[in-house]
Image (cartoon, rainbow, N blue to C red; front, top):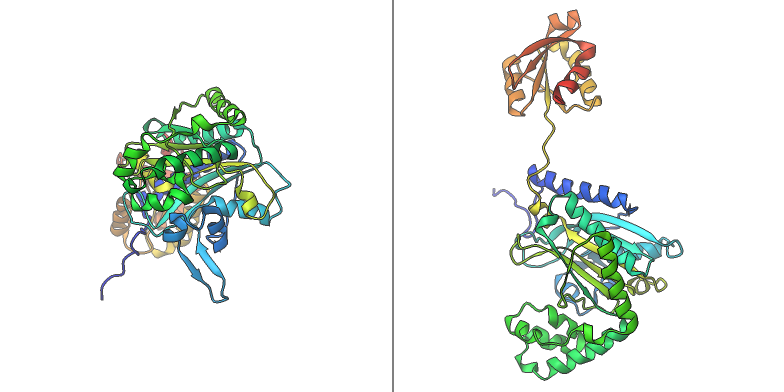
Length: 416
């Protein structure tokens, strides 16, 4: 019988892969906590409307990539393709729209049916941060700085560049949208099939097209800068000034867009040239209309998400595994003492293991196989005298240590 394999677009996180994954999450969680963000966990599946409202019925995610099904009760259910919509739904569901601001951090799996490629899977994982309530550009700058500081804490800030754009306010955006329809409408036949479909419905998304023919046309398309209202321009100026105050370097990229109407003002991406074509590692923007789409009151918000797989690929080496210590009992009679010693080491913060069976030779082979730094050897004679033999498996030395001092002595030797 053939061995079963993971479903296409999924993978197992084992050994170093899991350590890298956990390192990214733990680091992000720690830094987010310094900024006052609390961690939320929302369900992996939601009412399909949570995502069709937030992502738009005509978006590629909703129309082509969502894992949706009807459950036994007849309800439309979707595995979450992203985290922001669930956080906004949770804000409304838990009556927190009157307790603002809310600073939310999350981490977990997301699901999209798309072509697997480097750093991109059908079950993938994200960290994310949402700052809900403030409408000032300073809030946007702080959210972006949090992302920068997480990249810095992971040691990969130098491999990324922050690209920044404004989407203006609704008035600016409407004027820009009409200008884009006019511009692309005159060359409709030169557009790709996808962009022709987007022309009336969502012309901003043409700017983000990967089609070479579209990109040639996009180069001369009107940009938002010419359509900013005084209020939108003031917000844009305030954001850039606040980022300067936070010491965050950026470059302006007028091609960064968001296709949905609830996005406004800030759009940004941390990009890298280390991962091939899929260069975005952390991205977000301001979404002042999304909470209202979830049934809550109009509520300003800014947030971002980052792919854990891509971040882990950029991290230089997996975190080191603590050096283990092997407890090696000689004979069945000393097993109860060995177990107590094993637990004393663990309670003292030492990674400790003990083989379940075997003679001294086999147990020592096991100690070497797990990369133990020390072996704590005890037989009948040692137990009778209240001591153990502590063997340095790296240096080869050996010393006799009192039973009640083993945990302290080992912890000291491991930190030298």
